[in-house]
Image (cartoon, rainbow, N blue to C red; front, side, top):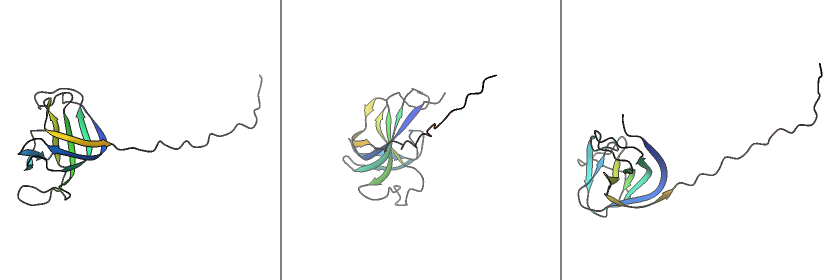
Length: 129
């Protein structure tokens, strides 16, 4: 059974802890490497995916986190050949329990839904049989 996860909207960035940190086409090491980046590259993210179960056949551990990349050093993410990334791009924040990137992000604050007015009961009629 595949590992389960929760996606949370965020605002902020992550920075690789070491050189050669990979950006991938999905939140798994079984996916295509799009590019790799040196330590302290500013990687803007909009979603954090946190795995809630472990599936070692896919190399996911509960507690692992991946960030969905929207910008790298202020620009749209690019593949290692310079082409624009056309699909999603992900970078590990915590992988197999070990930190990969330092995070500086916060949850997106969503306004609570506005309650619609409840209908008012202005009269009742009882029918007895």
